[in-house]
Image 1 (spheres, helix red, strand yellow):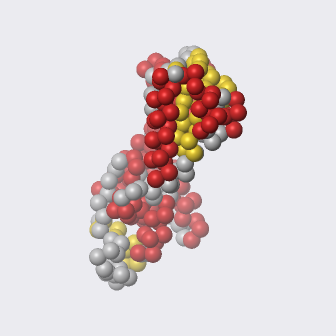
Image 2: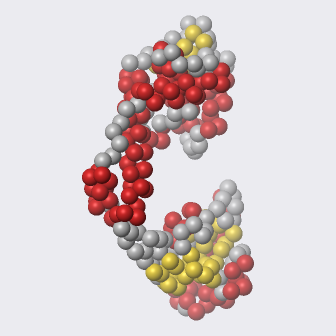
Image 3: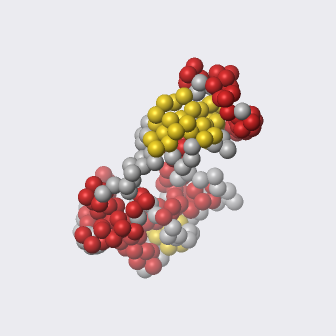
Length: 271
């Protein structure tokens, strides 16, 4: 990073990356270009904003670490910033009554996972193949319509259409509970009631026609069983809010050019 007064963009064309300056220090265009790979969004302008904001925040933290006498040279940068945060980001650990209150107000979150007996038909499609996904969704929807008329056809249709080895057992996945399938499939599956799902479920493998043959709902957990989990969550939340507030104060007093800092969670990255 160099002085804003002496650095200019290497390619000042309309498509070039923005020229960003923090308290008189410029963010090199090569550093910004390299940071882009760590931010995913369909809108490139959002990717540039998030990458630029990350580098601005990093520069502000490095400056503060230097002011406190921490070594941030070379490979010591991350350790120096961490030392800074340990003394500057202050928050209170949750008390027993805080944990109990959170548990009482969020009892639905603290249950065992449902146990389900699931049949499915997988219409395989790569997640980055848009046409293949659309075709699989159309086929899955047609299969669901047929099954709504006669669900006894499930095993035969699984045998004919499914790309999963379970087609040899009528599409049966057996009993499923937490962690036994890929997360994106499991999240949707656990929300379904017993019976044939009215819409196909997407996963990284394609589209699934799903029938919940049986569902045993989760049971409430006692406070003593989840206390450590509750306390850990509240500590994480408090530390995150304290860090956001600290960075917010740094940004408010900084001279930042070339980018607007946004404080939504999706834009808050400290690396």
